[in-house]
Length: 487
Image (cartoon, rainbow, N blue to C red; front, side, top):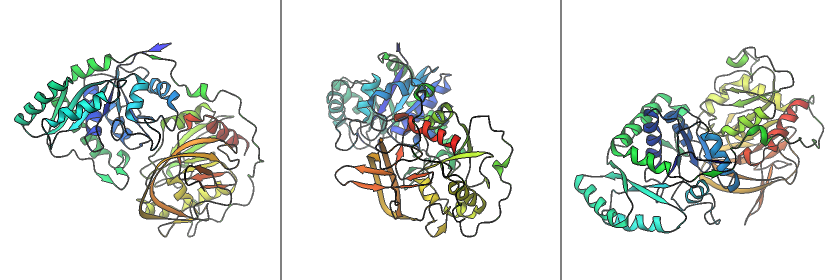
């Protein structure tokens, strides 16, 4: 089968050119016209999709050809875009920048080709005039399979500046589809890992997205952009479906349940369990274990497909907030703690001793616990000197060094997520360090020029710095839920 969803890829020559402002603003401007807009982000970024969701009212989804493989980019796009009138895909870094040492893999250009989508190039014109033509010509002609269908000029100083830029681009043969003037930057504050997530500044983020939408609506030819989106080629194949992805029979678990073993030592200063916000009754569906997923301001990094896969695999997924909830959701049989900023909220997380104790008891019982990056820090003994859950005999601290990049990993041993030898690709993005960096049973062996092991597998716990996209290996969700049933 084939499908044709009008779509645009918003790219730039480099980071900092204004992609997020233009892409988010364009989503908001189209939505204001009454269109159902499907928002997407190239690469592993968790933060921009939150702003996209505000602009469109739909879940922001990632398209990552490294984490998921090129073959899943089209199906995942079609999955997210079902029922939509138009899709806007925000690129990553510069148009042709991809995974280091992997050529075009996972670049915006690569994803645009996989989606058969026209590209709109956002150019920071603040320090150039006629040279813009050479810049745009180079990007438009570098790869003949990438169709640069137009340019949006950002940070234009005056009418005269705009005139010079348009004259130059007339010679390059690439139409100007928008001009944004040099104005005070829309209020989108950054922190040590990028923009501050929407969950931490919802009211201000709503205002910022509205301002982006107004700026793009005033400065861009929305009709021409919509027409360009309609010129995208048809995509063959079916939309990704979580139920189909997990439908094959689960493999047998190679290890016995350790549920019922002695619980780990509760965190220092733990108080008796008190009723919490998530202590409200929630009847468990027979045969469907409850999987608690951490959310709130401290744990904002997650892919929508993770929850969809867990649900399709047979779990009842319940979100809880480790900053506020003093209990895990009733009937919790498994726990997923994704990424985020626990270092920013370390004192509040530490102060919630009842929940730290509950997490430690659950992990000590052998129940499945999957933790990525921020989740790893939360399970440690302490973070920057403040007590955490104490599930892992490791300490975590903030550092000045940014660890960033794609990783090719293989499961060292059997765990609640994967059988030994399972290969997955992940992404590391943090300014923290854990000591020791791995347990007696590491989670992953990281391949590459400097191979290493990292992470922890203890009882039912799988904790690691690596962010992974479970759509690339649906057996992860199937295996996790099966362990929740049998533990």
